[in-house]
Amino acid sequence: MHVPDGFLPLPVIVGGYATTGALTWLSLRQIDRLPNPQAAIPRASLLTAAFFVASWIHIPVPPASVHLVLNGLLGTILGYFAMPAILIGLFFQAIMFNHGGLSTLGVNAAMMGIPALLAYRIFQLRRLFPKAYERVGLGVAAFASGAFGLGLSAAIFVGLLVTTIPTSLDASTERAAILTLTIAHVPVMAIEGAFTAALVLFLQRVRPQLLEQS
Amino acid sequence: MRFRWFSFLSVTCLAIALVPSRAIAHGSSVQYRTTQAIAIRAAFDSGEPMAEAQVTVFAPDNPTEPWLQGQTTANGEFSFIPDPARAGAWDVQVRQAGHGAIVTIPEEAIAAFSSSDGDPSAIAATLSSSSPSLSPAQIALTAAAGVWGCIGTACFFARKES
Image (cartoon, rainbow over the protein chains, first blue to last red):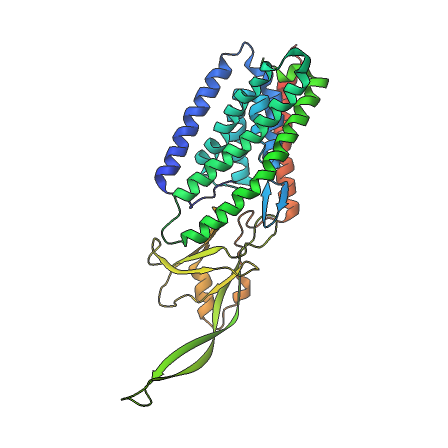
């Protein structure tokens, strides 16, 4: 779900960088306001590593092949740290694996970062569950935020591509290919949601402080 | 990308008026000549071929207007014969559902291609949506280095304050 170089018009690329710049600035400002901003860096670094390699885990969904993104998971656990983590992860994916591109780094980071920040908000809905159902609520909220993060990213991806199909291409063929890819992301939403829920429930059992924003 | 001998069939349809005043019959003649073409193979980074992806070829003298449009086969392959009159680098874009890549075929490749004493097999490039020239082992090592960088950062900030 990474847009490579040369596929998007210039205004979209500039807009992507502007959005990513604003979001990163906002996130870093929020992080700076924490009592101890450095405390969450180890957790953010480890999840950046997970995000960095997750795009190599391919899931064959016939006829397409899709990969994990984990942006919902990053948002759920990291909160505002997710934005710099995604930006760094995407930068290394672009320069090391040619996955995505440097010109589209802004677009890709916004596409995955906005859903990640919203996923964190969704995860906070866990507090609405009564105390007796705390673990159930935690699992449900984590599943929802993990699935939502990927789902919204896929929706933004499709929206960007469908509106910028170059006139030189056969638009109906390209649209059909985009639709196939979108449908292939539905099972990935379930996988990422389940993975997020499993990880959050595991962390709550072994290191519950990791789930609290310091 | 490989250069290879490629049989080019030119199909010429000739409308021959047998009975000029009454009916028109259609005869056809098929001619062939051998020439050299540029063959590309496009694959996703999972190794799966990009089947039926849209290919756009841009000529050196006009990098904005498509010179040729086409589609890859089920094996992700596509061939075209560049116009020798247009000197310079050719750009080939393969795209499917917003994924794909652009590869530039350098002028030297085309020059070697048109001169008979050149060794076209010496010039090779890969058009792939990822990792243009790295082997799987190199990619794994690069990924491991990146992951280790993150773990090192984590360890540094997780150290006990003295």
